[in-house]
Length: 90
Image 1: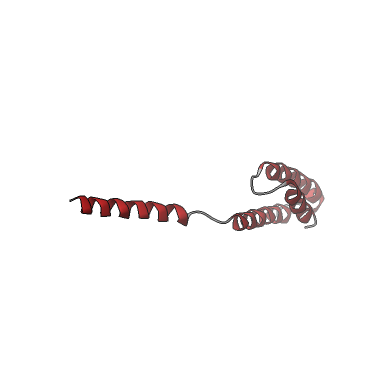
Image 2: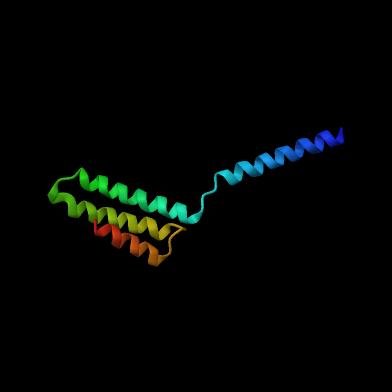
């Protein structure tokens, strides 16, 4: 009986470990996904606005993005500046 219980506990433990590892993404992948989502969001904003409003909307979005990146644990200050600069060129 103890053997069956031990095997059952081992199976449950292995299942829980496998389940937790499956959802973890590497930091580089998370950064890449975040940068792409910011780029896509800016492109959508610029695509759906009037020409005279582009500069104002872009400036507002970049200010919001800069604030978000300053609080994001994945990006340091230099990376955040580079991302904002790259998006400002769009």
